[in-house]
Image (tube, rainbow, N blue to C red; front, side, top):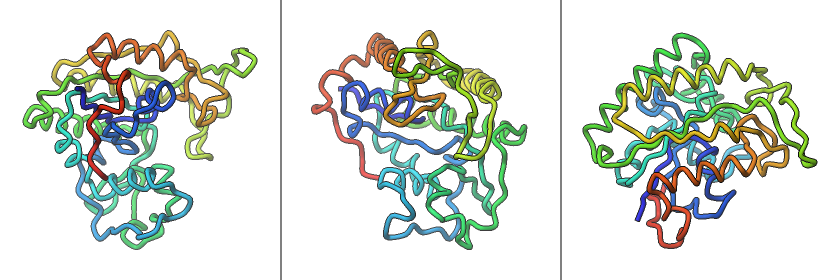
Length: 269
């Protein structure tokens, strides 16, 4: 039986809740980036006992994993048979906090943790900067060595090759460009810049890592106005998810979409 870990974003996780269920059986690591994933924990940080701001429990769990650097331990303990990567969450800037790197996610901003003394004196590393790209490639190389030297070496590695959609489909089936794209509700961005970054990241990752299967549903890359999470360049039409699921089944993950109740549970956060 497959044991699936996702190191990526909702574009891969949503293959389950949107098209069939069973996401609770996955190990899902999100709202992070290789430099943050492999960094030291933020010194002196301890999470609130209660959920801060308007965060849901799963959002808080992802945020705490990024700040306290617990995701790699969970990933190794899970002993996945398959690890699926996607880099859509690499749209967020990084933060240098003392000797640590953290991800400037929406969850971090909404939590209010940035106002704490241990996080207040941070420095932003813009995602599209050459410094951030160098950090990412260096950390990806470190991650590739970790894969080779741990039980992850026995897992099938899968890259979900993804890009931001430039067009969306509305409820009447009409296709139109996506306009006024922002990150975190206030930072205007150019879709082409982030797609170019994703292309460079994927090329570097493929060169660094052991052989992996590549899943590419670009023929169906179209955003869905009525997506359950709202309109976004990476909230796709159902056909996109169906094509990714088909390719994953062809790659040997057909059992992942047929009997979710029989899957082993992911370890607790």
